Image (tube, rainbow, N blue to C red):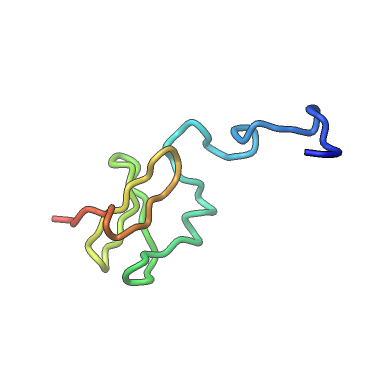
Length: 77
């Protein structure tokens, strides 16, 4: 990177809230919707999933990143 010194570089973990945890940033949660129903998602902290009640799906969160792929979601009982 031309013109960039090491003192200007910051680890990504210094900039990302909750880095190293599987919790989701509340501001991010406000913006996310279910890819199928386009309705808001609910964070299930215990299961570490985002729940779409209208679609009956639970989307996993891996390394703090919501995986909003229908093929990766599990059906709710």
